[in-house]
Image 1 (spheres, rainbow, N blue to C red):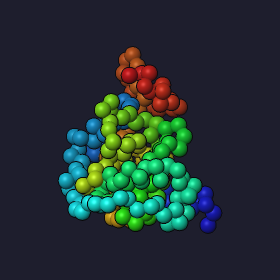
Image 2: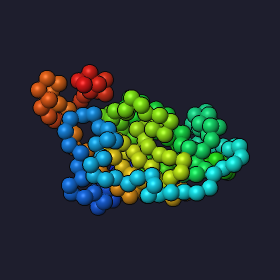
Image 3: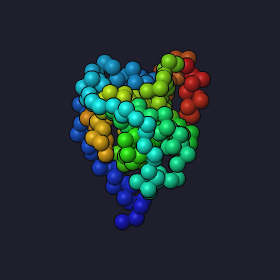
Image 4: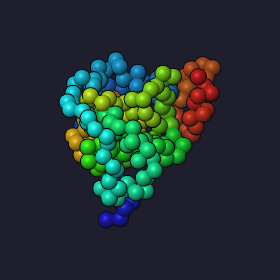
Length: 212
């Protein structure tokens, strides 16, 4: 199976899983941008729903660049981020970087043993239509939400640049991300004067910002 075909198959399989876990009425509508606040009316999962215990009480382990085929390619960002210590699910560290305009990528590092993960469930995230709140802090990194004392991991945008966009809630199992909830977005671009919703064509993130 060619890489291109394999990618299509994975994307279709992910779309089926998403559709099966999306209540019909859980839809964020209106005008761009997409924010995590748009999911609030649908009572999304909370960090307290997926608690974890145990903290790393020593210096983070050295990053094991042989633990994943992609780790060496992004070694500078991963090492730098991992050195700051755990910020997710007890003893894990989420490290994130850009992968082009309106795109972000990340890795998860086990601070206890240095193992690096690139979860295939969310290889990259398309964030063209997403806006962060002005007070976004350390645990609101590149359109993601996470907590050191929880296994819940939220992604805003379109994972793997697929057709579905919205707020995705995953549970970290220790080696993979399991989708537990998806709140779909059907937001569109709106006329900046009349605020009438129009089909989105090719509006850049800077143009969206200019509309606000």
